[in-house]
Length: 235
Image 1 (tube, rainbow, N blue to C red):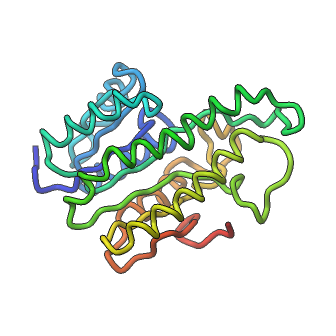
Image 2 (image 1 turned 120 degrees about the horizontal axis):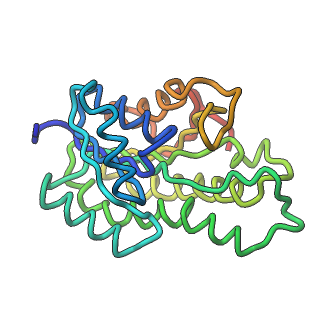
């Protein structure tokens, strides 16, 4: 294993945007920790693409809602690599297009926030000591334009509100970590043809490219921004 290669963790990396982001980062020579809630899903994802990329892909179990599991993985990464260079908070659930804010079960909303907001939050906190050891640390929160207050409308309440909150977290973290050189940005992949996005969207490689762009920004790059395809989006 190349111990000098950048080390990246992609949450929810077994399918969709996360899977393609892991593939592209490995293609750039990163050592990528491809995580999934079930270890067999991570192992299957790695086995399906490992021979085709120059970087190293490492399957790992990570349930971002399980604080003990998050801390355990952080200890493992510390022991094996001593640092983390890139954290991609991609894991998300419940694109609830059939729901309405006036009637949605708030238990469903809380469940969505546990993954989409608090999962990313506690994962970032747990890995922050390792990011601080990186010469070029990056945090990418995979968000959605459905979380943009400027264009927000009714429907999709749990998902949209969780992504608006993730955008707010992005701003808070970016400001607090700016002086340490840790760049924190939110990225909307756009409408992508994945299991969550459904048919008709752009190819998954195009959506992941914007995530990889934010994960590989130069030290002079932006922080605290909201982007799609490298271009700013309104909050």
